[in-house]
Image 1: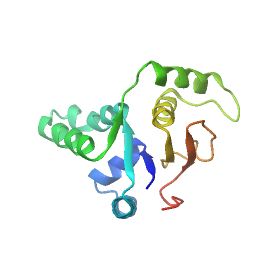
Image 2: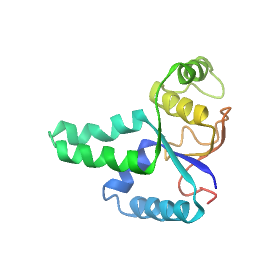
Image 3: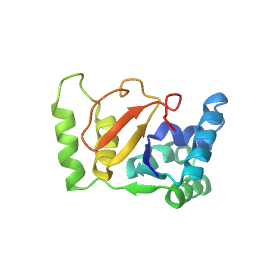
Image 4: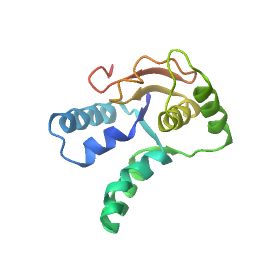
Length: 143
């Protein structure tokens, strides 16, 4: 069993039709369920996933998305412990500066102590963050 953090883009692919990307995420989720892996994400993911349905005043879709995430994932909130890690990530300049939303996601994942952080954001692949064993894409997920 592993603790696997999903960045927002994976939930977008799961909930909406993005062709091959959606198929990969569905297959990944099935593997995770077979292995009894824990799915972890952040409250920010919920906020980001709600932007599109909120922009068209689709309250029912907002509830469905939020309910689906809360029912299947451990949702990490931004608290003081996460804020400290966020500050360290934002302060570092090497190997590259990390954007604020990415730093929030990484700090939440690090606080949760995840084995794997999955994102299709290539700027994050291969970063070293204490509390996260491995950061990679769905295509390279070792599951």
